[in-house]
Image (cartoon, rainbow, N blue to C red; front, side):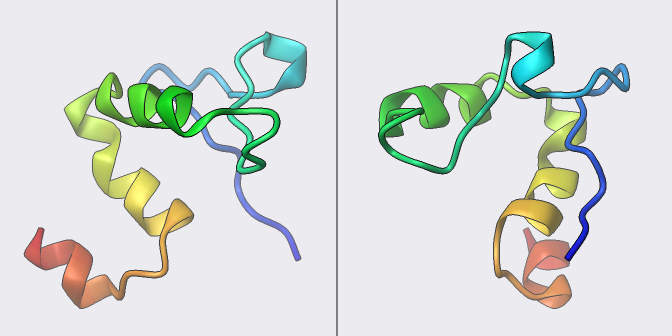
Length: 64
């Protein structure tokens, strides 16, 4: 399975080599840290993150 890189609005990737990795493992990124990451994300990126990081349908995302 492959997935496009998760990037910010400037096209910079998130990852270990960049020093800003966001892990889905609660032992590496706390719930608070993940919440803060998403809360502080630019509005223009919310739809892309919803498409890549949730199981919401396209219709549900468009409704949001």
